[in-house]
Length: 230
Image (cartoon, rainbow, N blue to C red; front, top):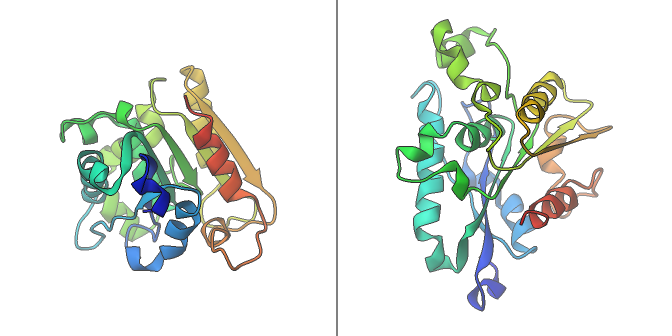
């Protein structure tokens, strides 16, 4: 938490890292914490269980547990639970988007998607059909695929969404932000999209490292979007 948070209630950011739902740990992302700490946010970076130890929806349920814990406890860290934002990269963006869109996850924990002020997703796989064998096993059987597709849960009353993607991303296609944004707009929800040239999949998160020269104003764009929310 920033030192300024001791004097007043700070906005709160919960960040979910990526790693194809199989890899990663919170210890790898202190640079994300520092980036938003410097902007005055209390930052929470939770771990979650991963495949093959668990299958979908366990990692999304873990993410929802982390959001619920934050809502219940962040006041002890001088965070303002009424200004809670979710952000994620890649698989973490998928987790954060599902928590924001599918109200069942937080409802099971006596919270609501309305407790989320806004969501920012970097290179998220929001709408795809698993093709690799491990992904088929992770999200299957096929009749369960609709449960992992974020666009299927858009009703128009979700938290405002900022969907970011890099043109050089060869892992997650542009169709994911296009289909999700289209669905939100069809339902008269709130969504902005930004596509950055010369940015690959990993670039979208490594761009937040403070000592690497920035190739895109991702930090500024996310912060501006969050600050614009009433």
